[in-house]
Length: 204
Image (cartoon, rainbow, N blue to C red; front, side, top):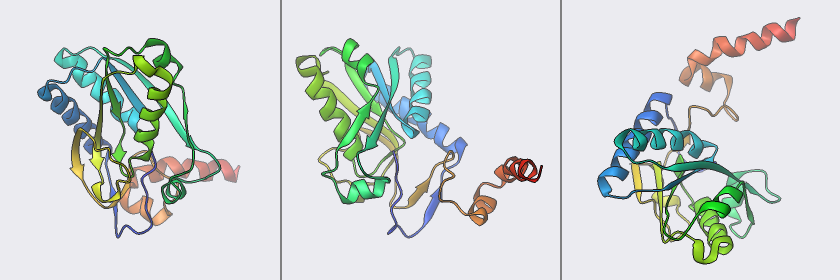
């Protein structure tokens, strides 16, 4: 999900290593809680990255899960922040057919994202699945994220498992859009030689 907010005072750059470590910490928290998810749903984009690590951690511990990534989009709005400012906007859910064909009430469903901020995306996913699955909707649905922004929550939901809380503007390791050259140079310096090859291509 998108998780930028113009009123946040500072940007926090999450490294690849930190995100992976936190995803494994989530897996351990889930196992220690006694929850045994049968399905993991990673919310594309960031939740799919975290979901892979959580699934691998649980598999290693001895908790097998089925797993899939699904995507959300916002009708008529170009950015996540606009959606937050207009919560009545329809959030569209893509790629749920496998879940609709497979899930049962006895399943335990874990929804994974990179950040829980407004909560609107997770809420929309749960509402959509509930409406489509009806009596087959799993009775036990939980949410896991590395990062939780409680001050931004616009729903009654709260992640069941999280590692960090913050109010900062988070920049995830896979995010580039909106960053200046100076910000990349200062916070992702390893990327400059890779991007430099584009200049060479343009010059030919």
